Length: 362
Ligand code: APR
Ligand code: ZN
Ligand code: ZN
Image (tube, rainbow, N blue to C red; front, side, top):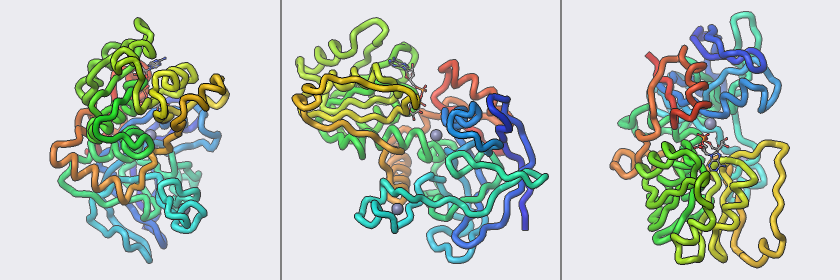
């Protein structure tokens, strides 16, 4: 059976998104059909629409989603119809050289659905991040659907599927933040605020939020920043040193993707500290650092891919913490919108008015 559903498509470079009828096949071997309940609007969707990821138009946008499994194909054991799931873009293969060494959080050969979703005229859609979830039903590899407690709100849970997981994991997984650590987070959008939340949850005792927008710094405080620095007005490196007895922070997290702020992270870090890059740089950007300092300061310069998460390990645990009131996921949901309001949500995102607009299905 083919499911005829409504979805949000980016048809050509820079053109506003369109609502279209999408044809979704029944799940084949290893696949799951998921009825989407909620899906957040992420910068990456906008980057697809602007042709900044690749040229494989038309795209089926959306990838930060939660929903209910409607059907599974043969051989699927990890989920069953009726399960409440968060969709992930790291369905680990179990066989690549990284998985073989027990490092599945970096899997180099992740799975997506094999069958294409199409427009009515048969045109194949490229699903954003191998998902495509601004649509009533989507087809994914079964490993892309991670079962979590159905008590969680779908709008909040879906955000773990991308940006919020990236930020939480940048602090908790990549940065290895622990009790009593001092942490600075540069850039307080959805990803940076999630890094602040992750640092708080991991027991950091000093959490310094850096941004150029006072409104963002105010939100950062609500997530647990103990100090804020407006880096348009104040040198952030000096300010961070002052707040840490002259030393700098144990972990500095860059959640913007700019060479300038990466360098500030590098300089605002204590000896033997860790820099984590979770912001995604422009492909043409380069950085220059004093080489002797790279050696002399010691520690680690790390990058965080999707918060180095292992969905099967991290999603159920984080949802449990959310349900216990220890992880503020609801705070990332700035507004809920309908499926036909994604274009408007892109503009709000560009104006910096929201952490996340979340599409909730009728
Ligand atoms: N110094 C400090 N803060 C800055 C600077 C700067 N030079 N430039 C921008 N910012 C702040 C913005 O004011 C904003 O609050 O960085 C924040 C970026 O947040 P968003 O644009 O909302 O982006 P977000 O969704 O959080 O993603 C951040 O992570 O996953 C990646 O692709 C994503 O690179 C992006 C980054
Ligand atoms: Zn693998
Ligand atoms: Zn995303």
